Length: 155
Image (tube, rainbow, N blue to C red; front, side, top):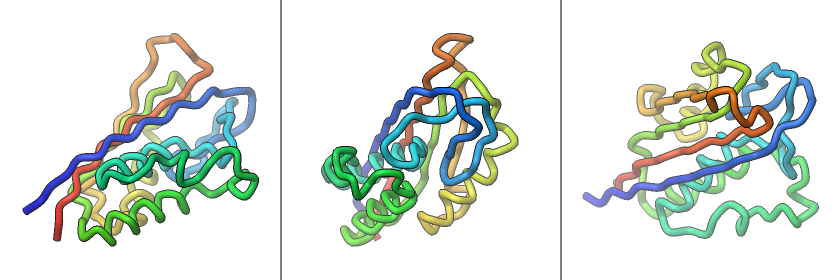
């Protein structure tokens, strides 16, 4: 059996707005993410974790923020590309650990839907995904970040 681990990270600044996306889930907030694409940091971190697990280039090399065709892009398409590459290399997802770091809003009401969306894209059980949200201890209210770790196994 062959197993591999991938790690992904993303960070974005926040500004005044009315919502942002986390794994395709609309998070009602007085802030929005500043980004070239839709700014979905969960999907960006997940894609980087998947790419890194198979030794691929990072998300910026696959989907450049200098390319006008990726402006406002739905980040689920990036994850689907990364997942396709993992599957094409003969691997399946064993588990995914997601850590979202932000001061507000609290994410408890959204965690199950985030987990469901990730499970659907990766074709795994929700039990194979963990999500935790951490605060910045009342510091850096204008930043949101995310870490994702994946474990993959050769089928």
